[in-house]
Image (tube, rainbow, N blue to C red; front, side, top):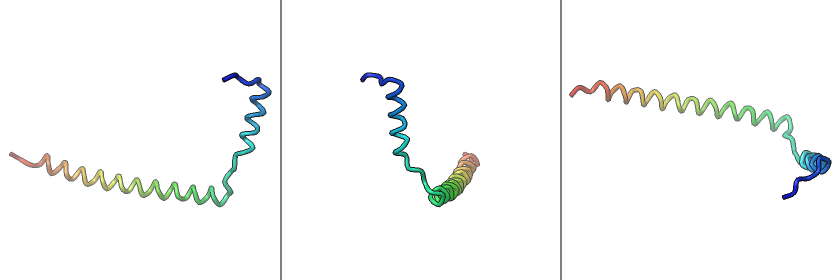
Length: 65
């Protein structure tokens, strides 16, 4: 694959940049809120899993033979 000249490269970059579709303010806001909501849900899930595993490990370590 041949390397394009600097002028061709810049023209190709501009052509690709023209194809970019930016989200609207509403879409960006909705996406931001969804990221925060999903982050909170995942944090709660891992907190609960950690607590359950901690209780399980405490039970295993407290067993005396």
